[in-house]
Image (cartoon, rainbow, N blue to C red; front, side):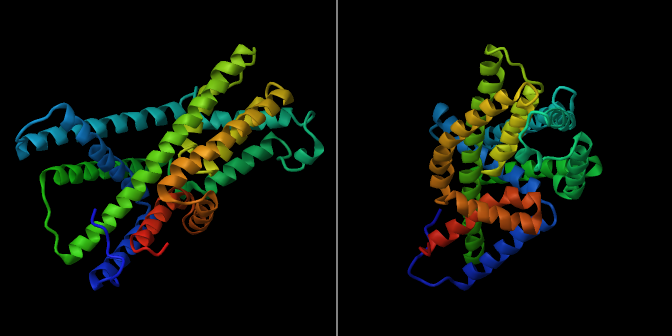
Length: 344
């Protein structure tokens, strides 16, 4: 990527490219195209990450464009297929009896109702009155955010189609980049620079958060599936909690709060002592993860946790759940643009 000049003022082409980029990012959120954008960027970046490794393993003195096209095309097909299978498997699991989110919510409601006798008064005042009230509140929240979640009926079908189309577009762009050397004119070059910066911001945030979520899920799974059973404690819906921990862990900061609340409440089904032990365990590992988060995500985009929280709060107010997901990436892109001109 070409380093932008820090001494010269922005050209007219750059100014218009910034305006167009801002409009595009707003358009993506306004018309619910974020899943397609993220899916396309994921495929595009994965192809660019993996291609050099394959090229080193199978060196060729003078590879033709045709052979390179076939190689990258096969790689794209494999990546898209694996991502589609992984997504379908996760959705199928979360909809099954073993991994149903609905079953988990109902179980948490029942646990809260059964635990009211052993919980302190100051905590009871902040909990729903009974399981029925908890279910009503959960249902109201889901109904309020139905548009953002887009997980039922035709919305799920539309989002699935958007994701598949986004992955195909990302793969096509990756193939084109692999076999074509572009000579952009000024405005196209300015747009390409915006795209490079946004793609780099996506790669830094998403792949860093993937690593953090994987580590968090592994440590949480170790606690739920190994440590507690060895102590003779068997919690219900362990697989569901581990799967949800990974999914919500992809959301910086807030994801940990969601998974922690879920695990502590389910731990109450055994005893208050187990719930406290779960809370202490999660606090300890997340203290470690805060340092890890600061090193991985903060180091990648040079942002503090409070910066990300403010960005997520503002974006959630404007665009709902989609804004929470997009906020770290958008913020990382804005900071990259500012740093490119030595403004921050």
